[in-house]
Amino acid sequence: MRTMRDEIPDPADAARSAIEEASQALQAVARMQEEIDQLKDEINNLRRRDETLNHYMTRLDDELRLAARLQQDFLPKTLPQVGDVYFHSLFRPAGYVSGDLYNVMRLDEAHIGFYMADAVGHGMPAALLTMFIKNALTTKEITPHGYRLLNPGEALQRLNEALLEQNLTQATFATAFYATINVQTLVCRYARAGHPCPLLMREDGSMQAVNADGGLLGIFPDEIYANGEVQLRHGDRLFVFSDGIEVAFAEDQVLDTMQWRAELQQRRHLSAEQLLMELSEHFDRELGSLQPKDDVSMIVLEIK
Image (tube, rainbow, N blue to C red; front, side):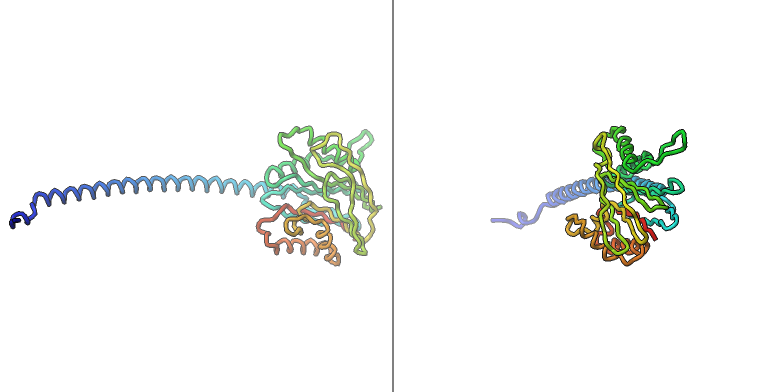
């Protein structure tokens, strides 16, 4: 038979059991504290990394903004207007800096030169290439008797040779269009290096592509760039643009040059200033305006 003494628990056993449970609990708390300390260390490390990353991102952002302002400074502040010859421009980089570059410059009393170049790719590498193109393009040659204006094909040929002489490590190339206009005769001479064909809109609204043979810059040695010539008349407008214009009006990522022509035709009744403003507003309304597909640039030569 069990006795009353057998049913009474031993106080010593109870105490030992309580001590063991307390010890296990303390060990568990100690392990949890170690894990908490480790998590705190990891959080502190992540915070320091985040602060370092923010510092570098802020510095990178500042440098890119400075580069963007510098590139803007390389663009013409004012466009020459001589007699009935007027120029207008549009410049919208896809990012901080652009792979597009344009310029309009007075060559002499009778001639104005203008060009547009588009370096392959986007961002800083393309922008750096445009700076080289700007410095390497030669428009006139000093002779013992004065100077000689280079015809557009010769100017592009020299630019192509200058780019090839750099022997760049990457497959870097660019497109370009260079032209001159005689402000007295309104004869426009031009050459093209793989660039989209400019569009000439006559006063009656009819349109034609301004074409000339010539390969990309920086690819083929001894490339020959053909010269073209067109007689402009009062009321005519010549649109020189980068391929970002065609991309901006493309649907479903399929490039359709005819769509861009149709968009331009619909706006033929607008003045050049209004047309460029309307195009800029169209880009802003586009769903992808916060992330443009490509750099967009345009020069409009107008004979008023």
